[in-house]
Image (cartoon, rainbow, N blue to C red; front, side, top):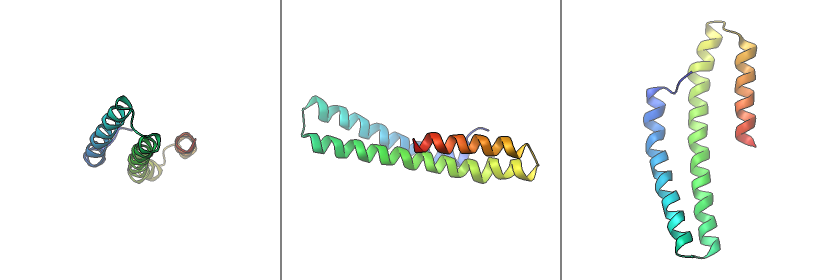
Length: 91
């Protein structure tokens, strides 16, 4: 199921901010800044991306998974898809 409008509006500004962080990291590398400083910025961008993923996952569970369960749509398939998504995220 597709991303809903509310979640899109919540995560899009975050993604654009992350895009700016990535551009900043590129500039830091081009300027040959201190390695720990660059790594800190990479970690900040990584955490921000993880937060976006969690917001999208929460939305998916609340909206799509719960609706599918209410409609009695193949629960095993839904659980398997959700489990695979969680495992991929955690790797």
